[in-house]
Amino acid sequence: MTMWKSVLAATALALASSTSVFAAKTDLVVGVVLEPPHLDPTAGAAAAIDEIVYANVFEGLTRIGRGGEVAPALAESWEISDDGKVYTFKLRAGATYHDGSAFDAEDVKFSLERAMAEDSTNAQKGLFAAIDTVEIVDPTTVKVTLKQPQGSFLYNLGWGDAVIVASESAEGNKENPVGTGPFKFDNWAKGSSITLSKAEGYWGEPVALDTVEFRIIPDAAAAVPALLTGDVHAFPNMPAGDALPQIEADPRFVVVVGSTEGETILSTNNKKAPFDNLKVRQAIAHALDREAIIAGNGSGFGTPIGSHFSPGNEAYVDLTGTYPHDVEKAKALLKEAGFEDGFKATLKLPPPSYARDGGQIVASQLREVGIELEIIPVEWAQWLDQVFKAKDYDLTIVSHTEPNDIGIYARDDYYFQYDNPEFDAVIAELDVTSDQAKRNELYAKAQTIIAEDAVNGYLFQLPKIGVWDAKLEGMWENSPVQATDLTGVKWAE
Image (cartoon, rainbow, N blue to C red; front, side):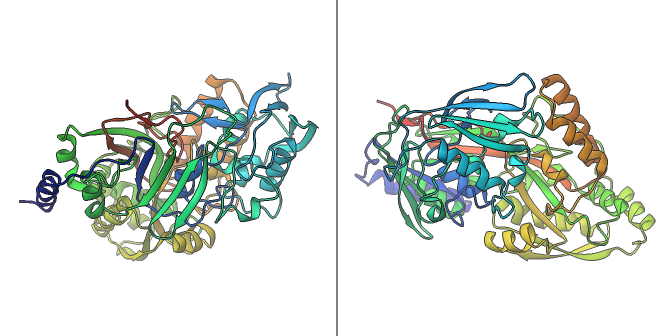
């Protein structure tokens, strides 16, 4: 009997003799794998921040819906000038922050100028680079003028990094987030849970849930029993391990395998020898067996990718054949690069199972061609400091869950340290192009350039394995943004 069969059998026995019931129908306990470093989406790159607060606590001028579409949020409407450079936003009248202060045009101006400022700590500062000026027309109208047209501007404003905050409370949002959303922050028991409650007086459609507890449960050994006993009602991203088939067979639960925006990659320091050598990066690309990595990534699910782009996007190009798995070809390329006897490097792995489990497989595959990797497990705070900020790494594995983010490869100081003027020119043209067919052509060209340059080892698109109580309605099947949006979630009558 496997460990999970034993756990399931024991749990079933406990349930049979238990008189416990689910929490009240307006309460919800949501399991999450990672604890965020803080709760301010405008000051951190961790996806775990948005997972809690995006759309729930904080809102932007626009929002990205469950189908990846751009929808109005704190801006109820907008007009765009004929030259595509001036956006005039009509704001929601009567919207307030959770501390009772009014939302108005001053907050929009403050938030956008703060994000684009020279000393900005926003992890996605590039989203705001096209903005020239932000002008207050009146308390409910804001005019944003761009330096040049930007086809993705409204989409960019829907990222978690672009939420609107008040100047009075902005500095305290890491520990005590104050937003305009339908839920307000209640409590953070560090290492255990984060609790939100229904925000009275919300400007939009009231939420059905009175209380939401995000309970931090990092592994399957704890997650599965918590689900089966009813301690947790939903896991938007379930660390089920090999217990998933048993959970699927249980009529009390719904299991949905959806898609995310999470490009899971072997991130590579392109300015650090020997990874500054194209032949070395090509050798690594040939050494990687995506199917084996997917099979052992902790869930066994995932879609192979050959570039930094979601297969769910209409502009996606399948480039997995650019460097097919070929051990002998990899060895030949290393020899051409002057590394016939291979070399040693480090592989820093953050906590998620796709990284820790997948990293073992990647290390084995690279060892086969002569590359010996020292595996260094790191916590998320270390990863953000050492890898993302200081660029102190050789290789790492991470899922980039920001929506439609291929433009990060054009950033001068991004942690990949990739520099290609041809790619930069494509992204620059994309920024000023609004015609969707032309944008798709440019996206295809951008994907091809970074695939051929083997900037990173492109592994798979992270799946979204959602498991929740069958009586629960409104949970998102896919993740077009890195969030657990509970604004439409309710218990069935």
